Each structure stands twice: as structure tokens, then as C-alpha cells.
Image (cartoon, rainbow, N blue to C red; front, side, top):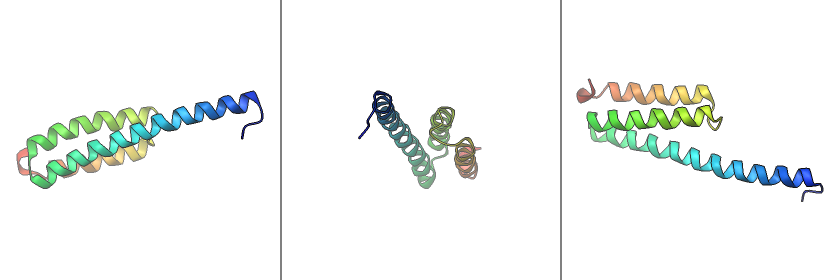
Length: 90
């Protein structure tokens, strides 16, 4: 339990940030899952569209510091490489 007013405030801030970070991380997982599902179906057009949305979401999470910039770059790169392998994506 926080003993001072500043510690209480810090606790409130941490709770807010945690809730926001969890929401952002969940969003990243969702868009990555959509791209992977489109890749598994072999639907190049849907995979490309999902990749575009994923890049935006992952980039935003990275800029907010929820996901490390190198991890975000790695995720986007691997998804893009997988989409590029699809025949209809070219």
C-alpha cells in the first residue's frame, strides 16, 4: 500500500498505463492473427490488406513504447515476407 500522496498518484498512473498497454498489446495480437489466417487460407489480397492494417497498429504500439521498436520492426518484416511468398500478393 502506498504511504504518501505521490506514491498513491504513481500507483493510479501505473494502473491506467497498464490498462492502456494491455489493450494495445491485445490489438497487436489480433491484427497479427488476421494476417496469419489470411496467409494460411492462401488469400493474397486479404493478406495484403490485413498486413497494411497490422503495420499501422504495430507501428503505433511501437511509437507509444508498448512494443520495442526492434520487436515491432521484426514482426512487420516477418509478416511482410510471409505475405510476399503468396502467389496472389505479387
